[in-house]
Length: 317
Image (cartoon, rainbow, N blue to C red; front, side, top):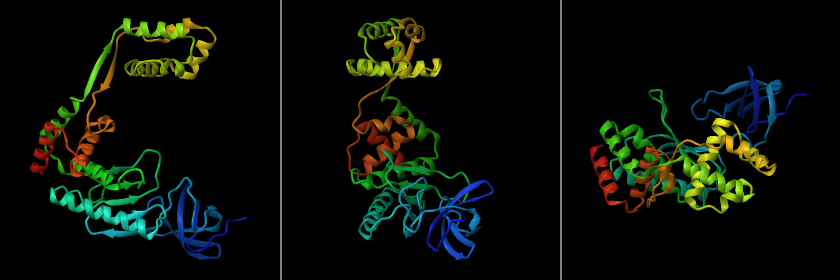
């Protein structure tokens, strides 16, 4: 028995072995037509389908599921097409539009709006992710800026941060300018070399503690916790053993196997130096620049050297 469908229903179809989410815009008995949601708005050509190809019908107002359904869009004068993949009320839509307008004005004031327009996607909150930026490789295709509005984080900060990716990818062309940011970024990272003595000392503590890895970790200093994380990562990578596996060995009294898989040579540990921007900024050079730009545009006070570099970078655009 085929799945029934009507106009404005969100349905899942399967054609040539691939599944696609459609919003039905034409229904005529056992045939229909709809707009693909997993490609919208970059492929707006309607897709024709037969009733036998319909796998599921999520109705006119689908609840959250594997696909993020497209609902509506509007065009912002600076950012371009703004596409909603979540239901929002009028007030929320106006807040988003207001935030985009405020950020567009600030970007223009600093001559940082050269990467616009982009395709803006408004999507539901997903864990800690507040946004993302995808630079398109094909010439003529607009980049995609995804925003996930959260009541716990100002939307303007997210827009500024994602705009930082656009500036980094599209406006900073001089290699020397990016090299300057790489040098700035590297100052916040410190490589600590752990000797075999350091590693053996921590192993002896673990074996004498008669605790699980998690309980043992709680009693360590912050620095030793970082070292333990690096050791566990080493064991997982080279010995294919998880924390659960190590706990089973410890609980069974097999200290010899734990000793065998424990690293005995020197390993390096990358430590993050404290900064007044964010730890997330030290994920990569590009993230560092984007966080610094967001901090700068939002009125935050950057360290003197960083602020000077930011001003020089903006002047060079």
